[in-house]
Image (cartoon, rainbow, N blue to C red; front, top):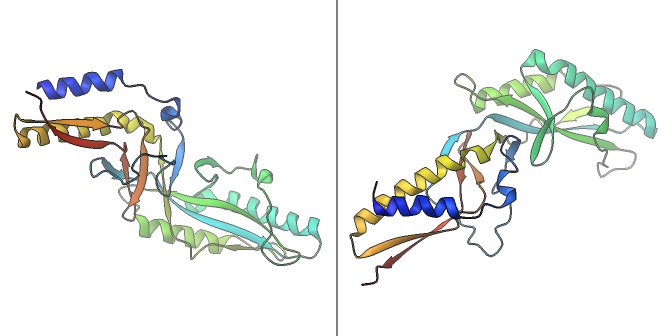
Length: 238
């Protein structure tokens, strides 16, 4: 092992890791961009990171009702949500809630969905997510078609209706923080190769390796996991 790589590994062991870095070690999170503001840090995504398939393709859907009576309207909407929950296994989809962390939508918690207005008098709506597990035989096109058929199969209740078939798919990944070690290995390898190319008169300094893992969607079903670090090349002092 070269002196540079040994030094980098020692630095990684000594760097303080914020408590937030382990927030998503097991949770499923929605991939819509970087996960948190980087403050004064340069927010440009580094080239080096880990590209891998996402775990789920997700579509956000809404059930809207405009029955005049408020209690009847909300009862119709929730009844339609309950029908969607019952139909989901048959169509090989799952229902979930959450803007960042994704949690299952079940018969135990669906009544906790928050009602919001729909921009018209005497309307309410609830929003949730429909997701499909991606795999060797399930790509983004397959996932979208499966969700489309599912939404079409959910029966209307009263004046309630389901919307969202034209929305863009988003992705989710389970436990992004568990890939931190693999990402740092990739960064260490890259810095070693760059140092070798530059020759003995220059050194490589890495900044920001203590920062949490962040993510972006790249392609239809892939995510890019990275630590937002900076690399600085400077002449070695004599």
